[in-house]
Length: 225
Length: 242
Image (cartoon, rainbow over all chains, first blue to last red; front, side, top):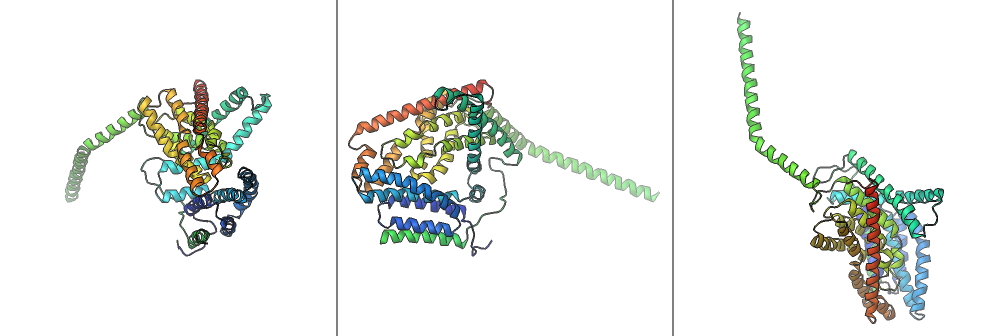
């Protein structure tokens, strides 16, 4: 596959590394006066490279949560505006990094990790953990509904929480994991050094390089200016 | 007459070929026999080792990996408050907020998969996600390795339920020194928020560190015991099969 092409989606490992870069740089350079502009630019950059949905999803959360904590920082620092802006920057970087890492498809990430010869147990575990989260929310909802049907009472009561929520919930987890393990095994997944093929290999493209250059150039500009 | 002789000669030749082939195969089998026996012995030893629950080092099966991954997902879902806690200027607030879920679920995982490396695997799975939420917490994988070393030094294996409880109790409190390091870097080197610094690292009030650490350890101990009770109950009900 040619490197000189523009992919609509970022290469998973590039997205992961860039996400880390944004979070770490955001935490370290939070007090820089140009940091907020860097974050705005990075958000636009992410939108241009296909993360529009996650950026829009994270934006209101980032503003709301960051705003609350910026207010706390402003009050605790005795009316220091720069402390509030720094706190806002930290949250902005955190949510922007999260938006970028959330835009990575689980299956594509697993393929990329398999390509770089990551241990099979790790790739399999990561794939299951990432795919299981939405399913888990559904399970929690079902157990809560069962509690309501049985008239078990409030979850805030520790005894009820233990007996009517935690026990059935963990029981469901064990049953689901047994079925899932069987399903995984019948699909030919094995651990150890057995050979395997990767369906649809993932390769970085010129667009990934452009994306990284943009982020790093922005960071350098913030530090130098 | 001549035809019959030809056929006879061909038959004799064919018999000789078959005999040579059989002899050849027998020789090859004889040559491979020690290797095959050694391989089978190795497999039998491995199977016996995997079946022996008193052994520390047993091979992970797909079933184990899947269960540990599911437990990790569970821990992660319940620790979604972490991004909100990381900037609250109270020492050890992250550990206090996550202590319960990071002790209940790992203990359930350990009580089902009682193998050396289970805690490390859970630590690695969690670190892969935490690195995206709060990079310093990704060092939780290191804490998992340390916890396993401590547990194996004391109990030798996870056979005893209290070994699992000990692992669950120590897991989260071990991240406190890591976070201490992070607060130092992030707030004393890069910032000028002196008041926040003293609150975070407890530099002026060492008793804050002691009290918060004690609270976190107490919380994780309670969580671990709850995890053990849940696992025991499921075991009694026949759900938690090995």
